[in-house]
Structure formats: C-alpha cells, structure tokens
Length: 633
Image 1: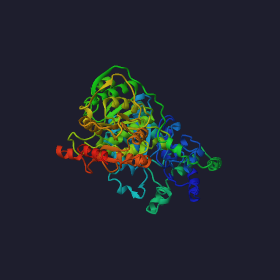
Image 2 (image 1 turned 90 degrees about the vertical axis):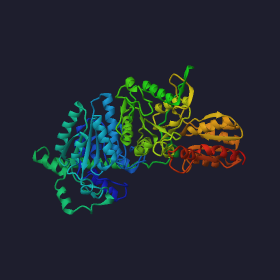
Image 3 (image 1 turned 90 degrees about the horizontal axis):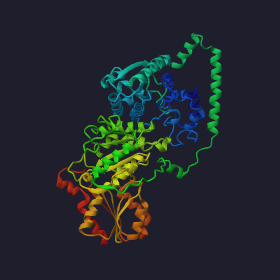
C-alpha cells in the first residue's frame, strides 16, 4: 500500500524517484523478522519491508524521499541511500559491491565483541558480478564471519536478463567455491523465507559462519519507474504475477481462517489512514533551508581531541621505528583496535613495521588479509559502524587503487550522508628514490586531497610521524596516512618514548627567513634541507605535514612576509596539491607577491625503475635552479 501511494505521488511529481519491490516483498519481510532488532541489516533500494519491519515511523521515510529534515540524510541523499544506527540499518551506495564488505566488518565486530549476533546483507543477482562481492565472500569464508548473504535473484539487472549476467545454473552454486554453505529459497513464499532463514540465523549465532542464500523471485516493475518493463516478455510477467507473494499469503490466511475478508478490509482501511496521516505530516514539513556552514561542518565528524604531550625521555630512532612505536602504543591505548593488511601478522609486514605485534596483541587484532584491498577497506568501515577503530595497511600506496571505491564513496561521504563516522586510518607506504618502479613508487596523495571527507597526512620526520599517527588514530574521521619508503631507514631523530599526539592541520616552520617561502612535504622536505645545508637560504621553510586539512594560516602569513614562493612536491606537476596551493596564494596574497609562485615537481610520466631514469624523473635535480629563478626574479 505504501508502494501504491508512492507510485501515485511519483506521477504527481511529489517524490523524485522510486525503486519498486512489488513482487518480492516476502524476502525483506521474512529476513527482517528473522533477525533481532539489535542485529544489523544492510538492505538495497527495493527492500521497503526491512524498514517497515523495523518500525521506522512512516513520516520519516516519506520525509527522506522528499529530502526533508526529518528524514535521515538532511536532503543530501535520496531513496534508500541512508542508514540509521537507531534502527541498526546500514543503507546502500549505488556501487552495490562494497555493501558485502561492510557486512563483513560488522560481523567481525560481532565476533570480537562475542555478542552472538548475525548481520544480513542484500544484493541483486546483477551485483554478484562485481569484484567487491567476490572479495567479501572470500573474506567472510576465510574468517568464518556470521553474515547472511541474501541474493535477490529477480530476473533482471536493470534490463539485462540473467542469461547475460552469469553462466551457472544457480548463483548459489558459486558458494561451494568459497567453501561456504548455500541455500535456494522460494522468495515469493513469506513463510518459507521466514522459517528457513530463522532456522539458519539461530544456527549461525551458535556456530558463526557465513551463509549464502539465493532467493528466487521476480521484479514486476522497472529497475526504477522511469525504466519501465518493455524488455520483459509478457508471458514471463504473467507467470510471476500469478506468484505474487502478498496475494498468496492473503489466500493462505483466508483458507486457514486466520483472517476474514472483513478483517482484511478493516486492516487496509487502518493502514490507508496511517499512510495518509504520515504523508500529510511529512508533506507539511518545511523544505530544508540551505546553509553553507551546516553543509561544510558536516563533512567531518567534529572532534575535540586534546593534544597529549610527551615526557622528556627521548630515543634516537629511525622514521620506520617511530611509525611502529606509534602504532604499538595506539594499540595499547585502544584495546579493541584492529590492524588489517597483507602479511602483517607473523611476517610483520613487508617493511616489518608490525613485527612482533601478533605476540603482543593476538591474531584477532592483527589480521592477515587475503589480497583484496576493496573488501578490507569496506570491512574497516563496517568495524567503525560497530564501534571499533581500525588501521588498514596498504602494502604499497600504489595498491590503494584496488580499494579506491570504498575510500572515496563510503568512507569519505559517510558522515556527510547519514551522520555515521568512518573511524579508519589507511597507512600508505609511498614514494620513489628506491628503484621500485611504476607499481611501487607512486606518491598518490592528490587522488585523495580532492575528495571532501578524507583527511590526508604526510609526515617527513620521525617525531612528526609518531605523534601524527597517534592523532590520526584518535580522530574519528577517515585518514590517509602517507609514509615515504625512502625515509623509513634513512632518517633518524630524537623521539619521545611515551605516547603523544600532534594536531592535524598544523604545518611545521623548520626555518625562518625573509627572502622566500619554500613549501614542501614528505621526502621533498629533505631535498630542501639538504640544499639549505649546502648553500644556506634566507627562507621560511614550511613542512606541511598535513595536506587535508591544510595550514592555510601559516602559508599566507609567510607569503605576506617574504613575497616569493617555491612549492616542491615529489608527485608529478599537473593536478598535484602544489597547484591548488599556488592558486590559493595567487587569489589571496597576490598584492604581496614579488614574483609568480613557482612549482617544482616530477616529470609527467609514470615513475621509472632504472636509477638514472628515476633520478631524472624526480624533482630533486631541478630544485636548485628553480630556487635561483625565483630569488632572482
């Protein structure tokens, strides 16, 4: 009845879009009734029954679909693209696949909490072709995660029939390849769905494991209403119309004399009144008033983490030791925090940063992962939903491209979309100068500084690395933490022995001068320091340390003092962070400049392996001439 109302309102232009679940209502209802209300469900955009079963007030759903304030996303997302901790529902993103990885993370959190809970996640048969689905199923099986993977096989992925989607008889057959239990259930029989799923869920609570269920059903309307159903043969529509789950259940209740026609009429009258009342309430609510500060303030979860100062005891350690020590002390402070990554457990990681961590914290918290960056990032998000911090190690920053989708579409947008933080740090060993070639030497921070909702940290010294890593882990927002491989064992410094934090978004003024402002981060800072030692420069030397948020205040103050600027980055020039800083300086400090802002960056090529080619690629050899050009302008 809600759907019928929405279809009328859609035609009247009172809602913007509708994804109908007519013909497959029994699945969402049966599954949602099988789980307790404190167990998470991750539905799709035609699982209205999940939301009604969880008894979300209808006016809030209607307000969500109209973009009103009493919905769940403050008008920032529509349809069922929302979640709510109040009802333990995690909404989908349009990319579909990461949903399964998020369920893995929630289930991992349940295992770590030992709460004997199950979570259920939905997708359609079309979504099962995505690589994220494969990764998540594999992780769930390897880790014995209590996830109910619900596949609604409804005949079409938008207009593409199953014959063009996969080439096995049943999707459930795939589960055996993961070593996973699977079942096929008639998705149009609500009693069959409930009885079988309820039994499975009870078993999964006692013996945690993933279960793959293929629900056979059919979508009676278009993917969304604008799509229509002209691509569906009429005889197929007629066949499935005769199997309508609501009509079948109603007939069963009448045959068993549980309901009468009179009672059904009364129920429908009561429901119609409730729907109309709630629609009127949502419809009368004022439109959201645009407020720029509210929009900007909701990109990140606010944090008032106090800076933790250190004692006077220090030790001379390498950059890599500072990272390892900072990570170890953070694990001790946050006693449920999880580290995940390839080869990080007994092997200690390819750079040995987590060497010995398994002995200290155990394999539940220091987890080797399969080679599946996307699923692990999604799982980290699921852990955050379940209240657990995590650190994910990319074996090399280059490999983050395989996990790009959940970073920029889940982690980055989460707080803005539905007020759910993503308490995840992703460690990014990066950078050239070590002869590792195009797949292991990129410094790809600009991929992420562009994306609102991500914080990006890039230290150059051991002291900064330890304190900033601790703060990144304390911060409830997603942080990309770049660690230059070339600095790991080449840079040493006196570093406090105890736990301490440094603020994100505050640059470091390494040297004061009056003739020029030199701005850099990561290994490029050391290029400048080395040049300055050879030929002293009367310069403000700024180590950015953090690229998002950026210390604009220090940059502008220095530029206004010196009047000349040199920006240095290891990344190639076009689209790099130096380009944006240059533009900002020109726009906001133009009247103070005595020369155009100069950028120094690496060549517009992939980074090569051979030492002479790599040296030519890197900006270091062009730094001295660029500095001279600006000073002499």
